[in-house]
Amino acid sequence: MRLERMNGWQDPRFEALWELYEASFPAYENRTLPDQKRAMEDERYHVDLIYEEDQWQGFVMYWQAPGYLYVEHFAVFPCGRGKGYGSKVLTALKEKGQPVLLEIDPPKEEISIRRKGFYERNGFCENPYDYQHIPYKKDDVPHPLVVMTWPEPISEEVYQGFRRFMRDVVMEYSEAKENNNWENILKFD
Image (cartoon, rainbow, N blue to C red; front, side):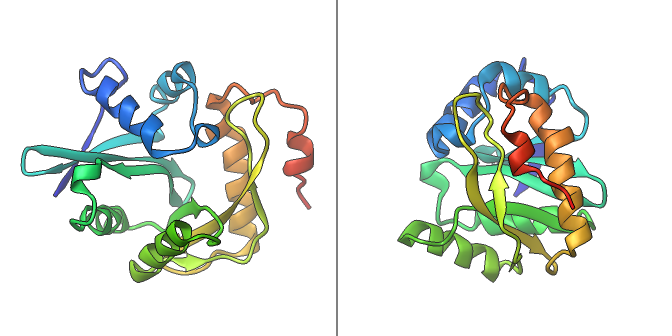
């Protein structure tokens, strides 16, 4: 398995990537197409394609944040699921030598419980913070997510830094960035 960085939305594979992206996540968890194209111009943002031999299996989208990697989106084509690519990708990210941070839906139904178990089997820990993800789109509302990290839980200081990174960097590439209710979501001590 190898990861290959996509060097921009002009890449001929981008259209298929975008279709998988939209099919893999609820609409409120996705950027708009123009915002995604802008995000891909930021050097801190990686869109890596997952290959097994010469077969494209999916993607992982992550940010090089100060002191850690933030995995924003991660998906495998349906025909490649259950073949260990997810664990291999997480291993490849861990081998970059930095802590890894990601978010999952609260484990309430079978699929979210299984997803949490998958990350735990891969060494990730749930963090105790009450986290609300800022909406990507102007008409959407914040939604609760669980922050998981590898190799260990993060401190309150790192968590607050993550929230600032989300506000100041990641959400710069969202149509909702001027949303006035962010102040209520992102209260900092």
